[in-house]
Length: 119
Image (cartoon, rainbow, N blue to C red):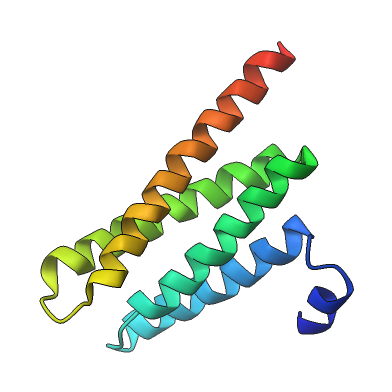
């Protein structure tokens, strides 16, 4: 994927795949008793980049974008839970969780605008 990123770092699909990879690594870490928060933050950043690029490029794969937003919501929820349940989690992770939630809400607003403008 790094080679693809060097060729075209503005590919929505590439950033989605990066996010998905980190997301799966976070799920695996959790199932092995590890900490998924740091990996989920990376996944969220990649998904956020995919959402930004999709908006700029008028990306038309709405199914992929809906799934991306769903994953951002899952990550935001997981990070919020971690921030509320873990006294050792630093304040940056809590801020990241809030930022992911804001991104999700902005993205959902954008998709609703696109869908209603098409009708």
